[in-house]
Image (cartoon, rainbow, N blue to C red):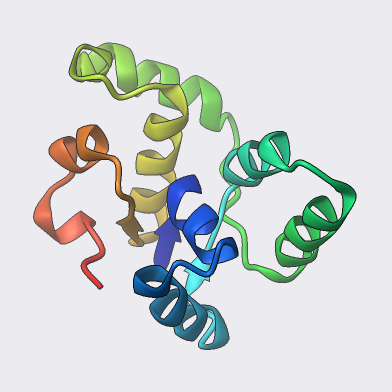
Length: 125
């Protein structure tokens, strides 16, 4: 199971070759899960209705990780581990906690997030 962050989805939607082929294959195998905050970021950056529609179509069809009080847990995790001092924000903390809760690997290009993840928590295409 793979939890791709916003940057990977953006590359996929832009059909960036290095990401597109691998990610499409993972989606077809239903190995990708997501969170509402990731799709919220995608929608925030959508520049027109066609993009919003495409993003929402993926959102409707993709398996989701649902965790009660995720944002409170992410805030506690951030505070207790002092992860913010490493440049990892609240959304990334939520992504880390969600992935850990279901045993998913995280696919991200974010160097700061990759810096706090164990090798086994990172997806390496």
